[in-house]
Every structure is written in structure tokens, then in C-alpha cells.
Image 1 (cartoon, rainbow, N blue to C red):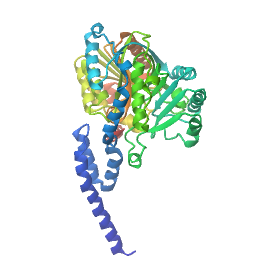
Image 2 (cartoon, one colour):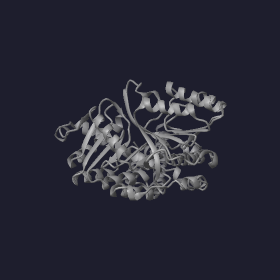
Image 3 (cartoon, rainbow, N blue to C red):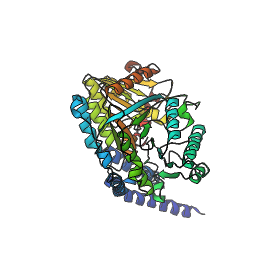
Length: 481
């Protein structure tokens, strides 16, 4: 091929690249983003890198689930329409709450568009082997149904063991449904899933992945971790299923997580989240009478299941985090595995510290993902300058997602303190209006600080240029980390 032919090809590719750019820029501008800076970043990426920027936007920038909001809303309506037993359990007596709890109750009920419930029993697990043991015991004892939804399910020792227990229960006549994220659980092969299906277990991947168009997006994920037994016992929290969550991975080492076991009417709300996701992913409507039994009230805990995702116009977790931080008057303890906050959440933490609130943040140490770790550290300057205390976990992997406010309100769930969790992922959490549970979480937090390194402002300011460069470079990708 002569020089003129190569010149023609180069010119054609250049023209094509800028044609794609001109076509995509209006799409970017018309696409609603959490912040204008995100729109500007995408436009600049597409203009300066016509092909690469366009491909990145197609993969990361388009909210394909938003196109199916009507289908998602239809799923929610189909499930909730037949739940009078759920509506009748809204027994929260707000008069017994203190002003801060009542303020959070009003906020979470309005943003989540669901009601808090009374009479729940909640058990906290800070050790992952104890949490797995409780889940296994509940699965073995199941009589009618087992519903599971996970972001990551590894086909390793613990993943295979739990799978085999599910198969045994299915062969005993228990209805088992297993919903897994197509990206997070990509290691689940047909050979792993086939024995489950042969035993009568219904399995399905959550979006993305249902269609060719959706497979272009790796950006929208179900990050939820839910186990439901007979509609009466529920589990949720930070733990996925894999040997690393038992501390058996040499890189991560000891795995620190927080998980919950629930009984009471809040379990129905968790079941409602699963049933809606299942219908959204499969089109199958779960029978209300069979799988939503009228619950007992085995405890005294006021609790509220919060479900958030990119299909909603209002970010449930972003608004809840922001409101909780601004409501604090005395102290905030925040533990998160990935700390890449939005500008609004970062400002809220700084403002709380300036107001005199004792703000302590516990994040993962260097064993976590490289890019996330350095992006996290890029926020330290302004936070430390405001008086926020920051601790990096050193014993192993810190994976808990918890927040407590003034020792009277707390939340435990799947959502990290980052833009991905609050804007892109489908997440779930439990809002808790109980001083005893808040005290337990603060006690766990204090124990974790003993295995953590406090970041001191003067020492931090002496770090080198290379460290600053890594931090700021990784921060550019914070919207999708």
C-alpha cells in the first residue's frame, strides 16, 4: 500500500472520529449527570480523545437502566400492590424517639418512599466466620423458601459449600431463587450453576447482561447482599460470598466486615426489595401469599430498609448520608471500604467538623484496590484541615459500611461512601433508630481504631510529589471507581 493510500485512510479515520465526537457531544449534554463537572469531563474526553473517549462514554457514561425506569416502577407496583400485611406493620411510634431520631425518620421515609417498622430483632456480626455460620444455619433450617441476591459469589470453597446446601434444600422441596450480578459474579460458570438448576433452583443474572445493548455497560451493578429464609429471617450487610471474606486470601488477609441478621417486619421490606429485583431481572412475579407471611414482632428495634439505585430520580443513599451528617450535633463515626465521596458529602463532613462535631472516618488501607486507595487519599487535605479524624485500617481489609450519628441513629448496609454506590449501584441498607445498636457499632469502631493508623495533618503535608500525582490522577476517575 503506497503513501497516498495510507494518507487517505488516516484522513478517513480522523473525519470519522470527529463525526462520532460531534454526534456524541449533544448526547452527553442531554444526559443528566450528578454534577455539571461530570458532563464537562465527558465532553473534554470525547473531544480530546475522539475514539477512546467515545468508547469510554458508551461503556461508562450511559445509564441504560434509566431507559427502563417504567419497567422498574411496574415491578415495584406489582409487588407492593398485594402487600397489605406489609402496610399493616408500619407501627413506628415516633413520639418515643428523640428529636434527632425523629428528624432522620422523616428524612428516610420521605426519600425512600417507604415506612419504618417496629418490633424487629437485629443481630450484628463483626466477625465474618460467625456471619457465615449464621447464614448456613438459616439455610439448613429453611422450610419453604430461600431467596439470595449477591454482587459477588465466588465458585470457591465457601461458595461451593453454600451452593451444595442450597441444592440439598431445593431437593427437599424448598423454593430457592438465586439472583447474582452479571459483572461481580462473572466467575460463575455454567458448570457451577447447572447442578443448581438441575435441582430446581431458579437462577438469574441481574442487569447489566440481559441483552446485547446492556452488556456494553459495566457501570450499573446490583451491589446488594441479601439472604431471606421463609420470609421470616433476613441477612444483609457488607459481606459477599467468597473465601477472601473469611480471611483466606493472602493479599487481603484478615477481613473486617459488618453484617446483620433480621427478624420482624423489616424482613418483609427486604423481601420486597428482592421480589422487585427478581421481577425486574426475570419477569417472574413472586407469589405474595406464599412468600410474604405476616411477621412476628420478636424484638424492640425500630428499623427501616432503604433501597437505592440509578432507576430513582432521587439518590436515597446520597441524600441520607448528607442529611445524617448535617443533623449531627456531637459525633459521627463512618466506616467504609471505599471512600471516594462526592463534593457535597465531602463538604458536609468538613462543615460538621467546623461546627465542632467529632468526625471520625475509618477507611481501607493499602491492601485495597490501588486506584481506589489513592483516589481516597486525595480527599485527605481538605478533611484533615477541617478537623476530621481519618484512620487507615492496617490489620487487613476493612470492608464494613456503617455510620452512626450522636449514638442514637445508625445505618448498616452495602453502600460505600463513594459516587458509585450513591449514584450508579443498586444498594440496600438498614436505618436503625436504636441507641443500643449505635453503641455496639461505636464499640466495634473503637476496636477497629486499635488496628488502624491515624493520619496526622503535619506528617501528611510532607508527603512527596509522586504521591500527590498518583492521588490526583486517580481522583479524576472518582465518579466510576
